[in-house]
Image (cartoon, rainbow, N blue to C red):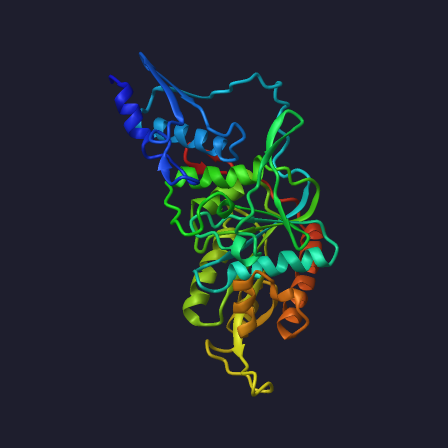
Length: 369
């Protein structure tokens, strides 16, 4: 197969830099393209040498070119104007994190990100060294929920490697792709770039030593979920659902995905959100708008721990909009999140006592092992 430079540049038009929303060809990041025989060499040059997303974009270029030009040798180089010291070997990913907890949901709109934020803040308030990764690459909401939309993480050299420095809020170290894109722009990425962005938030950030890392996953099951379990050994997963039957059906899918013998990530518990509504003027009344005890009953049926219930309260919505998590207040909702956090600590301790550490999922020739 004959490969031309124009063909290569046309393919690279599909790789978009999230910050500008434009292709890397249009913005001039693709500095040079060399095609010789069956080898393609791409030289990338970023305006900011410490661009936090440069490694994700490099990997995306490699992936898309290998897909298009199968059998060709692909080399993607990052142009450096100045010599940098030799890189030290990369350490095991998140090796200084004791527990990695995935927060997932079978469907959208059940309050998964709200739960992830409040759990992370609750753990930090309890004295645990805590991190939070917004892995909902296509709909990042955590920057707004933590009133950090204007935060811009930067990269610095740590032991010979360019590392992203997480934002810190309410005692939690946080990274989200939302910090690197315009909040009003839709994040439209091919799967490989989204997966690589998640990898970079884990591998190229200076997280330090943490007791707990919470990963807020996109709703449903996707490549992002598989990327996570392939990249790091996940201690366990928490599933968030509302009590209505349509949400419970999707929650079962989420539970089954983690419990699949090829994934084998322990399910630490089920959390029921929007359990009931209590009007301010009728504090003793509970209206079960989406059904009663649906998650509690499902947890019992599937022999999965039930971590607790969170009511529908206007203050939760207001907290998400103002960036002050509900758990920081002193009310019914704060108490619910703290109870769930305490229950989760017990389940993680039980899991670590009774089960072997989780292993990363290995993919070989298209099969999971």
